[in-house]
Amino acid sequence: MPHRMSFRERPIPKPRYCNMVYPQGGDSQALPTWKTYLYQLQKEAPKPKKILSTRDVPQRPPFYGNEYHGNITREEAEQLLCEQEGSYLVRKSDRAPDAYTLAIRFDGITKNFKLYYDGLHYVGEKRFETVEQLVADGLIHFYVESRAADYIASLSNESNYAESPYLAYSVKKKRLQQGKKTNASRRIDFVDGKLIESTNEPQDLTVDLDVDLSSMVSDIEKPHVFKTTNFIGLHWCDFCANFMWGLIAQGVKCQDCGFEAHKKCSEKVPNDCMPDIKHLKSLFGADLTTVVKAHQTPVPVVVEKCVKEIEQRGLNVEGLYRVAGLHDDVEEIRMAFDKGQPGISEEDKAKVLKDGLAALPTAHSQTLKYLFAHLVRVTEKKSKNMMGAPNLAIIFAPTLMRSPESLGDPLKGLQYAALEQRAIEMMLTQYKDIFLK
Image (cartoon, rainbow, N blue to C red; front, side):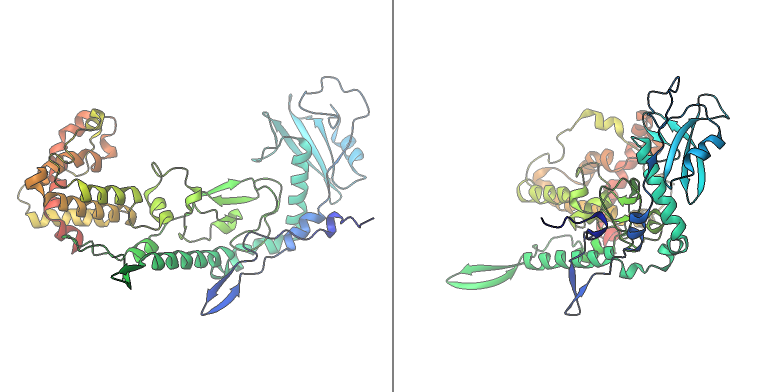
């Protein structure tokens, strides 16, 4: 009969980056070593042992089982629990009516906690379906945090982010993305019986975007969006490479890139989130910085595709952008600039606009710059499409110039519509001075 492996003999599960290697200086370098000390401690933690009530307890709450002992004193609970580590029971609190106390034995000491129930059992922030699960999680924390207190305290302080698993993974991910872009920009054409290598470079545009697309995306800073998470199975911290102990709410996870870490470790992580498309629930409504980082494009894909399609087929169409959308959009006009002051030169106005645009987040300013470059090209065909700068300003002001100050006040928005249109028109007529200098 084959030998059945016991729990303690089972191999430690491998973390998600375990077998990954990435090139550095021409060599393959293994990722940092995952540390198992805290995992071993969790396995050694005492298991919960329910102390059953041997008598009929009147008025037993329906959400407790035979671990409920009713109205017994602390001393009686102490005697029942003193024989076994990890033993526990629930008793009626002797300090407040309709209150209950959870008593747990650990390290020869009986610990008492006020126990609550609102559909789930809890003594703190964590919620559990059963009292046994609550006790099991508590015993793990008691054991790990008492045996490794100094080790845990130094996790985030002594860890080097430059050597973290997440950063190593991110380096490889960036290189793979850059490699794909390089290969995509080169193609082989078969012309007159000969193979000709060419690049997919865009045609020269009247308005130069003056941007380095790859550097623009990589230079954008994006903070992680951490949320406390109940990890299923065993997980290691992507910052310090240590095990995340406990049964639920073991740590936090970034909602955009999947970075997993202890809560304390997450506070040390810089703003270098690399969003993954699989974590984006929808392109529309998502944070703009998240979208451009996830797709590795300086402007959202949907904006780029719409602009290219219009420039290929629609520049000569009369009334381009004049066709009305939803009438409700007009009611959502928002003020973006303070009232203008008399006597200000066009150059000073352009400088104010340029300074304001410079204060925008990188992803927003890049998208705005790309969009206005397209609109300038639309105005160059105004003799055919009848869409000069004033007409485009009327169309785009309600969309681009929304201010939270006038939120819920359509009349105020309409009052400043003329100023918003003038700002849009100036950004079109002085595009080079505002965006390119």
